[in-house]
Image: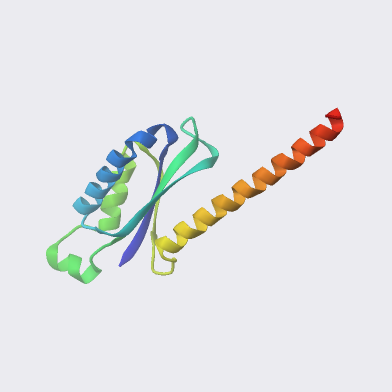
Length: 142
């Protein structure tokens, strides 16, 4: 079964994101999961303050776990439960979510939408700034 993990770290730990990514990969392997495909990271302003942080770095990755029948044969623990437990203990991860990825679009599609949305946001901000500059020039008669 395929799952998606999204976790959030503080913007202040951006330089250490490589270390944290490796730690999460290790936790995933120890829990019995196998990472598949690409890993996507992006920065965002948070909707509310989390542990004194207003910005954060999100990382999204996909992983697979053995089916229930395969786990029973090897007496392996429940991968998602084990990973959840370890992520709760990780001091650098502010928030995380694990969801079933069977109905989700591909990560590459998600990445393209994110990049397109960022470009559109920048364009809108630039247009608003130019409009405000024009209004200021009128008001100040420059």
